[in-house]
Length: 241
Image (cartoon, rainbow, N blue to C red):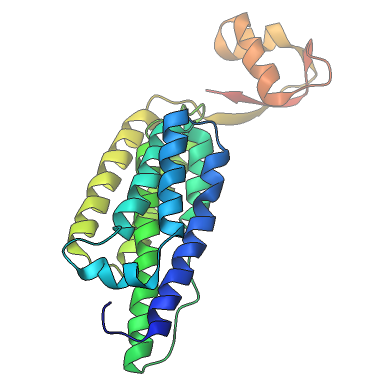
């Protein structure tokens, strides 16, 4: 980005600060002290970026590699945070979409390119993190794993529509395939929820024996249906099968 107008570089700096604030909530999660410190340091490094640093991004020895730093923050977080919590946070970050410059002038096109590159760097890192996290979540129901698989496939496919970086496309495809393959195998082993009905309220233990062949299944029925009286199940109920 060298030899470009100052306002182009200033806009890039402003967007990087926006991305930093988007990632700040990662520090509020339960992480080890080392990971917390590492993420905090990298966020501070990004926050301290100047227009000179932006110009140096195409040099052989940039002061800080923006894309690599963002990636390390997301990867460290994905590896350390509780999977279901990390999934929700990263899914929200993956929706990041800055207001892109619309001018067709050369400088306007340069500004748009910078905006897209920074946004894509964040989203691609986030999607890779999500692909990994999806394999670490302990799913109770088949439907939850199916939704996670769909999210991974759809989000990555959508991101690749405008992605020009061939190497990153290959990485996204690899992680998508690994994640969805794992989830597909897992889905075969998970239960699903069915709706059923009896003629009258039935004791939980009796109904569990009828549904599962084992009265101990009453615990699962009660957890799923939360009846007012745990001794009896309502006429209409749900069960995992």
